[in-house]
Every structure is written in C-alpha cells, then in structure tokens.
Image (tube, rainbow, N blue to C red):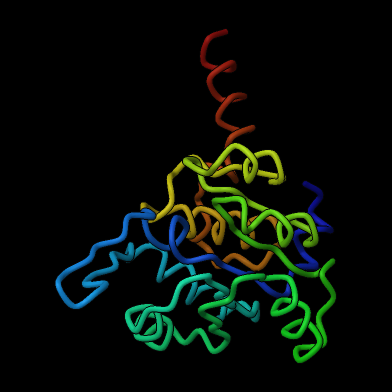
Length: 187
C-alpha cells in the first residue's frame, strides 16, 4: 500500500465481534454476560486519536459493554445494532466531511465486505471469513480480539509518518524488512 494512501487516512472504522473481540459470545441467564477486549487494542485506538485520526465503531450487535469500552477509550462515534453498515458509514462520512478515500476499516465477516470494498484501505483479521479476507487489502497476523486492531493502528501510524518514536512496531509494518534481514544474515 502506498505511503500516500495511508497518509490520507482520517477515519478508522472498526467492527466489534470478531475484530475488537475474539468473536465468541458469552451468554448468561440474563443475556449477554461478557465481552473480552484486548488492552493493546485500546492503546492503539488512543494513539490513533492522539494522531488526529477519528475512530468509529459500527456493529451489527448491541452491547452495553461496547458502550463502556468505547467511552473509556474516547471513541465518540459508536453505532450498534446496525444491520447494513454502508448507510451508517455514509452518514458518518458526511457528518465528519471525510471521503471514503480517506477511510480505513477492519472487518472479519461477510457483513463487513460492502464497507471493506468502499474504503481506501481495508484490513481483515487473521481469522476472518474467506470473503472478508478476499475483500481486504491487508490481513493481520493476529486474530480478532488478540491485538489485531493494535497491529492495524501501528501499521497506519508507521506508514503515514504520524508514529511517535518507539511506536508502531506491527508485524504488518515490518514484514518486508524482516525478510530482508533474514536474507542478509544468511549470506
């Protein structure tokens, strides 16, 4: 992906189940009882905001835990219970005055594919459905709920030139260099 494309990103849209979580649903006698979030994903989201990149959540399910986690991370754009994500995404872009060509997203399943097809840079988590993987420009090394969001945040910050020193060491950002380093040592 070109540095120019990455540098133009002003909005990162996240799915929840399978992206911010591992996709498993924990139910108790009163309904959904638990969602597990990875702390490193949270730091990546905060770093995006600090770099001036908006973060939004668009999810097909509704969960009070998502509201709490997003509030804790300072994510202002949270849309839950959204069956078709494209209309909500288009409204959000209009409100923020951001074009899809300045947007990235992370998805994991078929409902994410239309959005993934519309943005400038689409990521799929490592354990995504094959259709989501095909729609993605890049696939993370980590599965959803296990630091994949942080991997994407680090990649975007490193390749846009917005990374602070010591930041942005994702597997996505260093794949090519790691291969060159291995070849150099073998010589």
